[in-house]
Image (cartoon, each protein chain N blue to C red):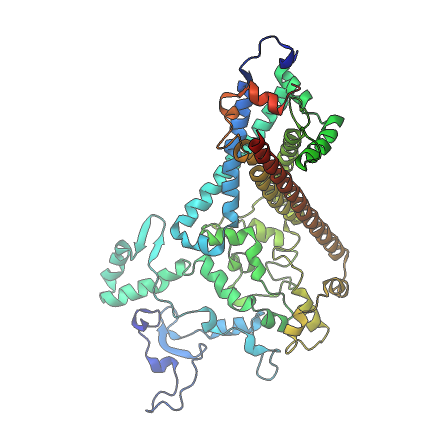
Length: 331
Length: 219
């Protein structure tokens, strides 16, 4: 398994430092920012993932500096939380069948006579040209943490299991290649997954000012909403449902969320939360609140309508059935 | 002249003419396909995941069929409106469908009959209150579901709020319509004793004079 992976040719001790003595008492956890003993041929220096490490640390997912760690930094993802040691994915695309392109490899081997090395090197970059995870796998990867309500509450965030209410998720479920997963909107072309920002940061693709172009997604290979009007990109795609915002709000208020999540769950205080939520109450928030009320009202009225109408119909037809049967017996 | 006054009772009477039967057929076929292709989106997640590589074509064709049938259903509606005003038979159809005060009295009378308080059911005209209610619900439902459907189809030009509301209403109306068809319409033409397994009016348009006398004596 490991031999076939991206790192298959790298010795154990190159990543797992202090393996020189047996038994390996002093082995450290793998640190991806370690300088590798592999030389990167374009610049002929030791290869390292260190720059990405720094990039992630500056992003919303960063752990902070040792002197000034973020709160609950232990929740933040490390490299291996997202990157599994990728087994080479068969290349696919354009008019090629999945697998290794013998035609391309033929050109490599004419100079790089070591066939095994050429194949490995070819695959090393070729697998990066294609998405190695399906949209479903990506969504599940992010949801590993982001649907954990307790963890999200610690970071003043709503849990995003409600992404599953969206039509985007339906497309992902049905394996539609055009359906967007998390990355399609949160790190589209021009952004990096390693430097994700808060939605309140103007550099974020889902910041209010960037949303319209993100929805339009003109440069993407996916067909999104190229003609999206401004109001299309308003509102929340991850809908806020009554019931979880209260925990977030409790955290903001400084209530004991860590040991009190379960106890908070039992308390229905949604209305009061709506009122106290307005830390930066702008006119738009008021509209959103109004729209939410309309939405819930329509939902309520329709539920009532369905119950009454269908219930009434059922009673009517049962009475008709009873009377018809009875009349037949009398005839 | 009503049938009762005519000297010779015909054995059968045309209840739905050819145009009406075609309208019913179109509505029936598109409705069933719309229900199927619509509810595919509400299948439990595990079922969808079991589709595996079939998921993508199912999702693709579901969308195409749903839109084609939607357009066809709206076209049938437009055709029906033209029929209502342009044809003689359409005008009489429309006139007979208008709810009148007698319908309210009929409802009370009929419920009393069901409960055993009145010996006889009310004498209905060409369309009784059950049929009028269903027809008007169909008209209202078609308008609501068409408008929200068109909004959802042209999503790029609407605000997220309009789309959220449309999804909600489209889905709720679909539940209402599907259940109403099963409980109300299917009972009247399938389940009801005397009709089972199926009334054939929608195929040949004919109803026996005996049946008509029982259900719509005042026509």
